[in-house]
Image (cartoon, rainbow over all chains, first blue to last red; front, top):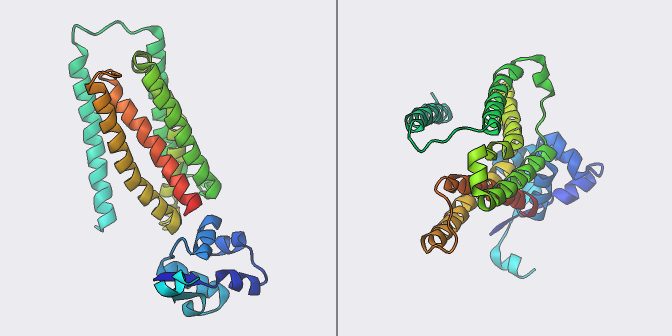
Length: 74
Length: 205
């Protein structure tokens, strides 16, 4: 089971916000945003809520669960 | 008293005991007949090192309480630079400690190899102190903290294995490390592997 996300799409829809701008707005490094987007790093609840608040969406709209068989099939 | 403050207090007490213990043991051992006359270079090195430590402590206690504190910044570049510097100090320290064992111990050269890293560490401590006064607890983001945790675990494992290997190499007299050099090898190796693995996890994961 993995954590998937729509951050890249959300950034694009949110005035094409760059990773750097997003990172600055929520108080993390650009590398952290990059790792979350790539699915390499699972953010804490607090950070997920900060991201959701920044985009004006719910956490579920940004993050979702990828089942193992679904992931392997990709 | 919360858990963090409790551990902070315990660490401070342990540190003070270690410093005082080190001084007392050092003074007790100093009078042995094997002791040799200090050269002028050794004296200069020791005095300079003492003043640098004093300067770092003064900076730590004074600067975070001044107006300059608001200009203290912790960002990605500083995080990366600190660890690159840690790796450089580690490589130079390890190489010199192995190649020029006697010289490094005798002249206290190793203290100067960590001085730059030491000052960056003091800068981190100053930021932490300044932010603590302003009730801002975090100076690193959660991924950086996670990277540091993983790097610390990796370092413990890797350094233990390498030191075990070095012990066997020394035991079978393939390459002998002088008695006093063990700590320096351990210290610089830890610095190198910790900084390297933190950077690796930060960039690759």
